[in-house]
Length: 620
Image 1: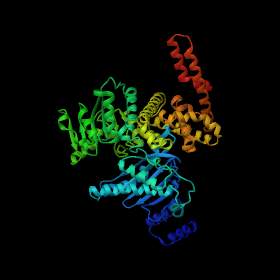
Image 2 (image 1 turned 30 degrees about the horizontal axis):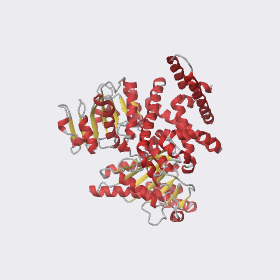
Image 3 (image 1 turned 60 degrees about the horizontal axis):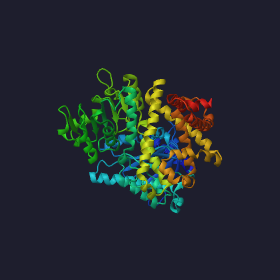
Image 4 (image 1 turned 60 degrees about the vertical axis):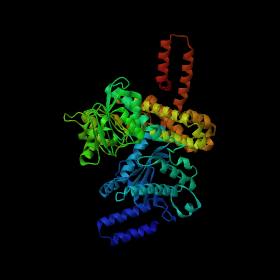
């Protein structure tokens, strides 16, 4: 291959005069040299698949973090990328279907960068689970087809993408003979549903993985109808988003949402996963205190300064209707509904998130980079103040990094970043896949209600821990809230990496001593059913990653980022293991204090001091 490439390079340089053609042909050769696995010689393949060395997309002057690996897949009417930042990673599969050829060309130009950005955001949000971050984005060129044809071609692109990934990660007699493999190691890909992926897609993906010989087909994708935790059904992402909203309202605006009235505007409609569920949760938890003054989605927007009628919003959510179906008679005299069938309606929808004033803006749906440096000032009012002082990002990458910073510096906008706010979804997916490793589908279904309720408790608890730390460190140290969010993610992820390296070198008996950490990571019902079988059912690397991430997040949430960041990287693992031992000692001491005969008030204060600072003090 190298000698053929060298000869081709010489021939191109000698015979191609056009500089654009020369650059293109050289880049094609570069891609060939960086291809580690391909199905190009596989008969009856549905699409071309390449597993590439990520350096091919990241030249020396690119300062972004280098991914662990990526796949490129091209088939009839679609192209796709899958980018991941760790060997074992988790992230969603989304479909992008531009409405016209011009938009398709624009999406194609930024296709890799969007997938990279989403995967990187996923890496930041995956800090609480054993898997790193990944993302897959299918760009389907179907704008010239009828609605029926669009749906058929879109569903077919999901199938072709899936089958091609399976070509490159499973070992069968056919693939061993025909798939070119210069990578030389088995790879595990874990998908989850994202925009436009339907329940029938998920079922087909699992069945296809099984038929193709995947060793654990139910782990290939999460949110399965029966043996899974459907994100829309249980509102898992929105449950986490709401915790951040609750803490942010209290800490940044001085609003107690259980007692005080507050206003919300949001993108993402009542028939969307995150948008529909946040509507239900706001009404469930805060009742009439939650006034949703504006909602925009693909169909249009509804606005009412007195708050959109809750009963009508619930009707839309339960009926799976977009916002254009809001009953006009339910509006106050100042309310209105615009549908996107007219130019005026499109303009009103597209500007709603900027025009309306509200205490908080919640982007719960929408395209990445909707607010960027070219338009962020539109979010400000004429006097330069923000139309909302608080933004909680339920949607990924809705605001660019530089626009977040500009809104903070110029108008003091408090932004809870996506990698914090919407992390609950991927945590749920991780638990679902771990369940698929540990118990049968029948066992899961039998105990599903209990497991789901325990997962919901865990995601709310993890959201509360991070939200509390976010505002603690924001009040103590300089910088915007998104920068604090990134610091927290980096502290946990870097600690996890150091701990994983140390665990890989530990003898098995030492790993056994740390297994209680993995048990505490699991929902209680799942642990009770299966923990004695963990070692035989779960890959050892997954167990090590889980122990490392549990310990890293425990330390950072309890002690803060400065505790980790002041340590040399080669000391983090040693300090973490000491931390566990000292924590055990403090727990024993607290039990002793519980039995001491002393005034209850004094006892509670002493126990609180031991709980908050005992381990840190014991390490000195």
